[in-house]
Length: 276
Image (cartoon, rainbow, N blue to C red; front, side, top):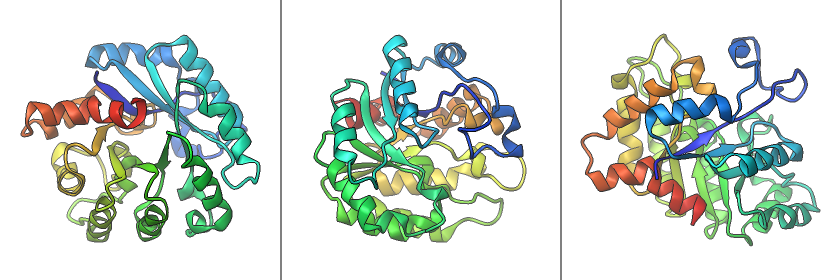
């Protein structure tokens, strides 16, 4: 299967999606499976992993309901209150659902850059580690040192870095701190990485494949082709790119690799990490 390892759905309202600012005006409408399906068909993508966009359990319920009714959704990365002392009850509730594959917290929006090192959060992560599920890491480049510590605290938990850890991408200004830290994180074999979300981190105009290639080269070298997975970050990617253009760019970046390596990144790795 060719799998998009990272996309979102929502029925927009003015209260739940607090992260949407004026620059996200084009996203302030409904994005549902019927809107994504033609894009998947056009790009020959067989299914997706739907990822939470709201920090509330009704988001998890919403995505699971969509997954129950739309076969393109192969798995759901949901949300539970990991800092809550009752989190095990919530995990028990959801872990038995066949479409739940993991959970995520929007770490990069927390005022405390060391939030992931808090005792209550890590108690929740340890509880999560008792289930055959993954944890998605949504961070900025500045959080990579803490993330390395965090990954070392939970060596038995499968972790996936979203959006290559969101380096700021500028022309003629490569992020060397990001490169050094992502290489260190990649030494942890239980951590994988998504080729997603890169286009929305470009800060000085339009993006092109050559601008992104140095960042792609670093994560390919660091994680290797069997711990990278393609993701679109649709519909957020539409702020900077069509779905088709992003798929074409990733396909081009992968073209020097073997067929087996390309197959792994375009779906087999996501299937192994999330669905096996």
